[in-house]
Image 1 (cartoon, one colour):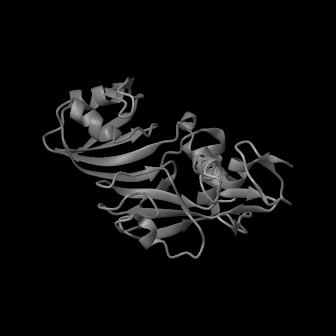
Image 2 (cartoon, rainbow, N blue to C red):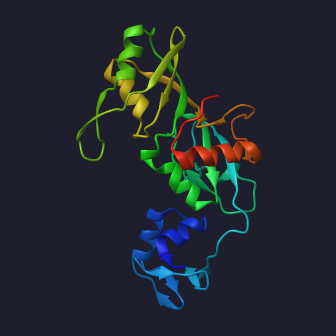
Image 3 (tube, rainbow, N blue to C red):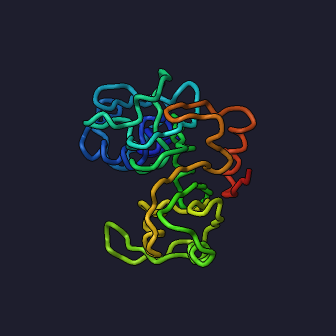
Length: 244
């Protein structure tokens, strides 16, 4: 069965489809000795090399939960040593599923399953992500209800105004609240709070779909397996959200 080179590299857990397209454009990918082009198709028998390294499907597809501490970026590597690779002890190639701001902490998913990674990242899935947020002044019911209804923020890249999707918010303290989003806009919660004159002082992601931060300390990771993994995959396949 043939598939496009970017899907092959993603499914193999080598990189995302976007990163695969970049590698192909830069001429770093070959298929059976020929430089690959965008749209090149491969089969299981094809010899695919990236920078001279052979790429094949992983023997075992695995998923992990990581508690990213404040001060680290979501990339695996960084020129200043601020990436999350230092927390990965497994001897397999893993990739982060989505991002979490450097000044935020909490749950991230890591996997070598490119297909699952792409499905989770699809915004159309509407997958829930829950956060605990601390702000600089007392929270009002009006603030929570207006956050839930949607806030107009600007796209950082284009300057275009965007209305955030409806969400769920509830107070858990005088200056703390939980918020559940189905979007992943850049610094979304901070920008939503800023619209109402609130400054975020601490932000922690505590859940992605049915996976929670429970039992993890900053810098720790655990493997997701068994029923928990099957539930995650089922949620991704059907575009449904799982409450805890």
